[in-house]
Image 1 (cartoon, helix red, strand yellow):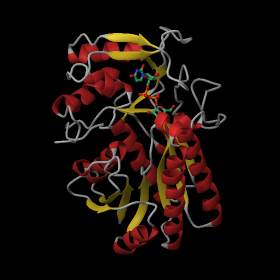
Image 2 (spheres, protein in one colour):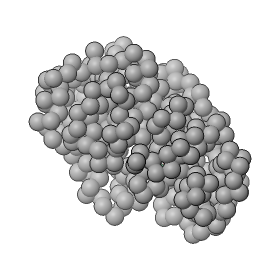
Image 3 (cartoon, protein in one colour):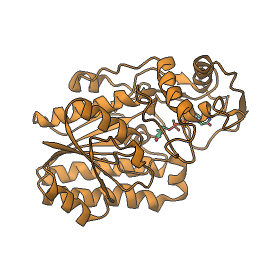
Length: 329
Ligand code: UFG
């Protein structure tokens, strides 16, 4: 039986496809290559170029391949862009998922694991954040992900379909082999931006605000290695294969690191001074986001293996040092 990875040419999707293939699964990848890269597609996966909003494309795929479960990463995921282009996010994330669900229901595909986000919570009321906490997104990206979760909830009540929604905190790091890693254009995430300095791509890194109510005044995040995220998707597929009910899980390490701590660790890993400049706050940044992942640990049996920030940044550095321009040759 085959697993379909939608968005398998993107950052988290490509790492998940690598782990699935390592485990001996048969993998099909579909991606429109809007933000993904052909070079990130595992050579052993069968690749279909196409868009989840194209129902004929999906119907054809489900007829050609014996798909047992879908893992769905195909979405736009930039918080800032989602505020200036909200309709792009409703179109790709929400409408795309609606078309996908129509095709899955018609083709009797009954299991799906999909990417959700800490952005579904908005400004947290409690730390660490539990799955049962209030969800009040403060940006369009988080809102479309929350709406996707709700669409899955109602569709699964009406049709023979079960889902697992995985709410990621700050995905980071790269495959241990250094073959694939994070590549966004333009880059917007903290760790790859920091590593652009020792790579000679920028002079310094900006710290967005140093007067937050945190230990050193800079924002605190829960950084989770992309391979640990990939493993959680595999466990979620197994959970659904065993006949378990639909569910939602947070995925983080439960440890918070400040922006200054991340920069200091990168200095140590790269042996570069990495100058940092205090800059104004970025709109919409919560001071602190830390996950409780106890539910994923107890129900899925998830055990993140790369909680050490130095190790996380070392894997990212191995990738970025050898691919300063990402996948672009
Ligand atoms: N930051 C800087 N300087 C930079 C870039 C980031 O100081 O040049 C800070 C941010 O202000 C933030 C932290 O570093 O405090 C992490 O920022 P990222 O942009 O790497 O990640 P976010 O926490 O903003 O976003 C992540 C995911 C989103 C998800 C969100 C949930 O990337 O997909 O968490 O809130 F929606």
